[in-house]
Structures are given as structure tokens and as C-alpha cells.
Image (cartoon, rainbow, N blue to C red):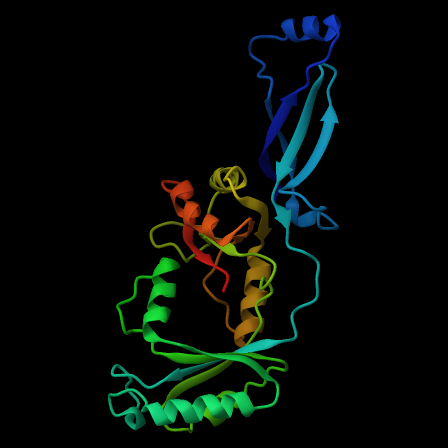
Length: 286
């Protein structure tokens, strides 16, 4: 679908009286500094070069330099071959019989950590407490009660193997263990803005072109946002299926992915989008 993106125009100060008189003759119903172009970001053959946004410039007869601004398309790159492991520990809220309504003992946690650090292909093993998991979820805008997300061990996996999870779940103190493939956007973006699709926003349908334009304009003009990518719903689904090893179709829409000058910029994103329709949720890439 072709979309209309905002065009920002910069008026150049030229030292010729001819240009000045041409500007003065501009009809009143024409607005210098704003116009629009139709673009289809998905159809471009290559990712635009470095910069905040993709830009096409041209100089009109009246001396106005117009820059056509649109989101960057998803980079054409290979899917990640690495993965990550999450080992959730028993907690008071666990329903599994082996957990017996309580968390693992300190000795069980030490044994689990030692085992993970000895396993070939795992690196960066670290413990995530219930409090840290809760803070991360709240920061990502998720409405969860404290204690709903159990403590866990997490690690990077050189070669993902889904069979590892069920093997670890047999150990005392562990409720669930999952191996995931690395997300396509890991290392490429620091934040994401999930947009309304056909069914992921209750009471409404997919985001409209006009609504998407407004969200993009708010993001690209936000101080500290370096790049804005628009990921198509098709790519979102493909990425989700690869990460989770599942074949079903998730309830998702398009996603804007952002690169930021520093992590503190994330706190400005939600306020900048407040009141704009078509936004599902805002979260960090972790």
C-alpha cells in the first residue's frame, strides 16, 4: 500500500533578488515548507544509508529544497543463528506439584547455576530476581502484579536447541525452561512501538495510514531518536515464529523500531505518543 509521508522543506537563503521576488509571487493558497509525496517503503530495494531517516532531496524552481521523509525499511540481513535460554524457578505462585508452593532452596539455586555455567555453548549466565523481572515488566508497560513473574536464570546460547528446555525442567527447583532464537532486532534497535493490527487492539481495527503518519512524525522529531524503522506485519510474524519455534500466527500489527542516542530517551517515547490512536504498546528491546 502506498503511503503519504510528511515532507519537510527547508527554504534556502540565496543572495539573489530574483529568488526573493519569485517567493513573493507565490499564490496565497500554496504553503511553502510543506507538501507531500507518495511512497511505498516496503518496495524499496535497499536500506537507505546512515542518518536519522531516509531522505530524498530536490530543489524546486522557487529555490525551496524539499526533503521527503519516511521510515527506514527493515534491514536486509540474515536471521540470527544464536539464541537465549530462560530457566524459570519455582515460586509460591507455581502450580506444579514438584514446586510445592514455594521457591527453590539456596542449594538448589547454586546447583542450577553451576550446571548452566558448565554446559557447552552457554555464556553470560545471570540470575534475574522476581523484583527485577517485575520492574522490567512495569517499565515495558505491562500490567502485572508483583510476584507474577518468577525469578529465573538467563543465558546466551551459541547454537539453540529446543530439547534443552525439557531436560532442565526435570531438575528440582525449576518450573519452566525455554530456548528461544535471538530476535532479529537484537543489537539493531533499543525500543519498539507496536501498532494496532487487525485484532490486537480491542475495540478497533488496524492502524490507518493517517494514524501511522502521525505516530512516525512524533517519533522522528523526538530528541534522541536516531533512526526509525517500520517493520511490516509479515516480517513481524516471521520473526516471532523463528524466535518462538511456533507455527501459529500471532495477533500482531506493524512495529516501529527505534535506535536511541542513550537509554534515557526511552522515557520520552510514551509521553510523545500520548493521545495518538493506533498505538498498542511501547517497550524496550532487551
